[in-house]
Length: 205
Image (cartoon, rainbow, N blue to C red; front, side):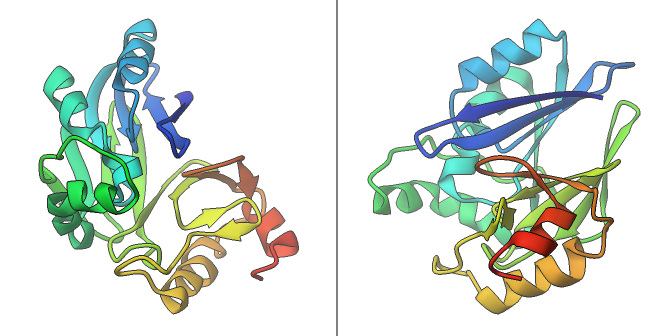
């Protein structure tokens, strides 16, 4: 597996590029901004983008959707409960004093337990609402990409429209903490961690 991590945009989102070494098919998780950097990384690694995956539809994670789709022809994947938020993207950004390009709607709407295939790799969709209604995490061998659900010694904020503290705590305790302690967590912002580290050291647990 090829894994490249780019920190993009003013809010420093972790954008992940995952590629299959055998077929060179790839996905991009959360292209919030800096599409030129994303395209350059794809080209440098000779990767063909198949899917753009949004862990949730907040503007800082999806701001590059439109251009990346236009440049590559990749399909946008998002949970069905957050797809409607893409329609309100510019309004979201305005509240925080930012401007973003409107995003096309999702091409593929996923739900809990769905599997995203590219090349010889798979990502399992885990519905982890709380930060947003349609927030998802994505699991592959030994790694979970958690978007804004679980961070290093922290959790996603729940005070935005559609957020829920009860839901995010349920998502983490019952859907993420069921995995082994050595499972790597690759969050939407900040440094990586593990399930075990969060169980033991996070002030939320």
